[in-house]
Length: 241
Image (tube, rainbow, N blue to C red; front, side, top):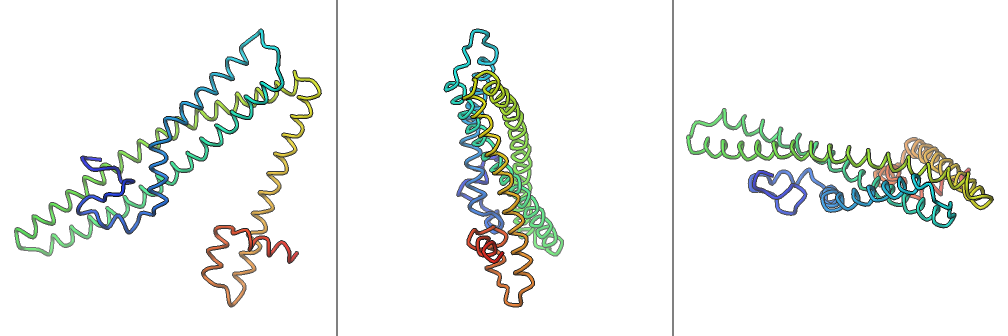
C-alpha cells in the first residue's frame, strides 16, 4: 500500500500508530487468510464446477452411486470452505471501514492543529503527517475495492457450484434407485433438523437476553456471553423450561 506493507501485516507505518487502537488481531488474521487462501479456494471451486459439469454432460455415465455421493460431498465441503473465507472478507471490509473513519478523524485533528500553528517548521511536520495519513487512506480505499471485487467474483463461482451440486443431488435421487432415494431423504431430513436447531437456538438466546436484561444484578460479562451465544448460558435457560 503505497510503499508500505498491507494494513494486515504486523508493521504499522510511522505516523500511523493510532491504527493500532482500532484494529483487532482477528481482523488482521482474517485479512491474511483472505490474501493467502483466496486463490487456492478459487481454484478448488472452479475445479469442482468443471468436474460436476463434465459429469452432468457425460452421456455415457453409469450413475455410479458411490462416485456421485463422493462428488456431492466434496463439492459441499468446498462451498462451505469458500463461504467461511467470504466471512473473512466481510471482517476485512469492516476493519477497513473503521480505519477509514479513524484516519479521517486523525486528518481533521491535524488540520485543526495546523490552523493554530505559526511556526513554519512545526507546520511542515504537520503537513508531512497529513500527507502520510492521506496516502494511507488512498491505499485503504484501493484495498476495500479490491476485496469487494474479489469477494463478488468468488460468490458468483460458489453460487454456480451450489446450483451444480443441487443438480447432482437430484440426479442421485432420480437415477440411483432405492439407495439414492434413501440418501436424498436423509439429506433433506438433516437440513430440516439443522434449520429447526438454528431457529431454536436463536429463540432461546433472545429469551435469555431478555431474562438477563430484566435482572438487577445483570453483569457486563453475562452481556458478552449473551452476544456470543455461549452454550452454557443457553443450556441453562433451556433447562429452566
